[in-house]
Image (cartoon, rainbow, N blue to C red):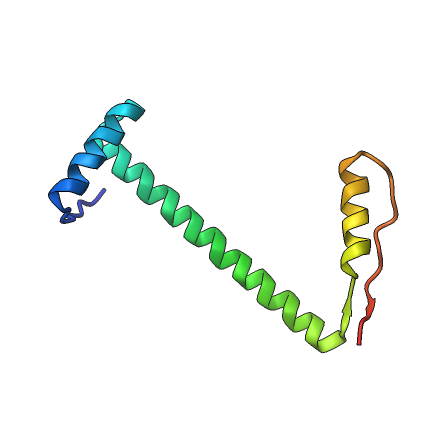
Length: 93
């Protein structure tokens, strides 16, 4: 495990210490957890961007999609536990 030094303004360091105490953690654990959470979110965002770009490219290539109202009805029925047929994509333009 490596060590990294960060410089914090005094007021931020105090806020971290107070927040860590409220959470029942050391300042070190609080900062580490915050970094892990931030990195995990950044990785998730990057993967969602990748998926969106891939799907957008496919839509531009085919012009096919499921209209929102059909997708919404399918999702609502699925969440309600109903067995419904998945809507098929079709040319929208």
